[in-house]
Image (cartoon, rainbow, N blue to C red):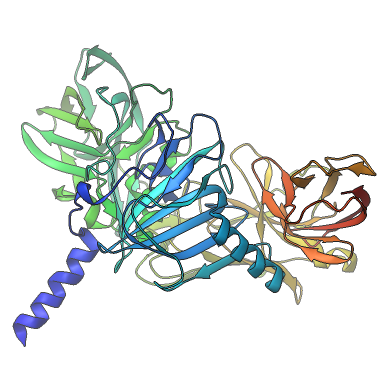
Length: 575
């Protein structure tokens, strides 16, 4: 029995850290008729998540055939305005799941079924699941066609492979399933040093000191300064790094970063895979305050308390470099991409006589991620931070601040309240409540907003009830109550009474000033019809599903924003 329990424990740990290796021979390339160039790689750091797959360029075009990478069946089909847009999930016989995102359209039989389900449910978005008997596929069978749907900035295929039982994502390049042409080593762009002290068990950091980096030779970098870098008794480095691939101008994330001091390895970050519950931890792997303003990956060469161990095969003293006054040490940082190209930076550090000392702040409140916390600003504002929402203990300074400025159409109804610094990432959302007086005509359109890095207000959400607005959010920084008074705008992309007999679709331009488009309903001759939203293009599109009949049709479109404002359009076309 003990052996069996040990096996289960080992299996559980292994599922969190790494799944079995893939056999590249099991898979074929998932798309036909492309140059096999790439625009993004696995594990790149995005706002609030690691990139879950690879992005394959489709030569600027849509409609490239997508094929089953291995034998299996279509187990899920989804259609949403954002995210992956049109997406197909294949459960494969070899124990993995393949995901295809941003499709233009599904294979004809699947497309017809999805259309029927949307119409029956009167739902523009659907998420459908199937068993092995519905749509079995053989390796090479066409399952759909590449496109630009969802949160896509241009035509491409987002492709993933997951371990089916655990849904752990694989790094397809490291596994050898995808083999890009790449002999370009990573680029080390900049180095930062942060000294650290502790007060009441809370780590307090100095302002980051930044150092310029130049390339000496291919794959070898040095600091522009000649003298040693001054360091304190205890601190860590942050490396800003990026990567390139042959044949494209895109930038890519890094697979692996290591650091050693005096020849002894003390840190390694590696992006071999992760489960979706760990995706937001990219905000802990990166140095979040620096990452917010960088076009590179700002990788913290240290481990926060709440950053998962599975990303760090080597970790000594949580990545802290300890240096006595006057002591000199040699530090080497190496970056490696997923194709095995490497770059290195070496430099000398010297311990300072004077070290950073954190100063006590009697107005600060210590927040421990090990338990839930409630922070108040008077009786009018509060935030509930759940357990393990923070990646480390912090000091918070809850305060009332000047009311923010807003664009036309947005009414500010409260001062701003800051509970946590804007550069504080959250792993779990917090619940914010702000009490304020809201005139009755505005109550249904009232939400929370946050002041963004550019000083403008961004929609957070929530609802007004009993004299307060409450929202659950990952947003930190200056929060305020606002009301959005403007309805979305609708502009048909066809003339009134136009003959659309030769058109494949009915198109509209739709936009909103603040809270974004939340829902839409399209009716033709009084009947509900499916309508796709392409948020990056700002369009709503109905694809005709029947042949033209040469007669007049009445079209009605209603669009609702995130604050409950609704716009309507009524028109005529012939088809």
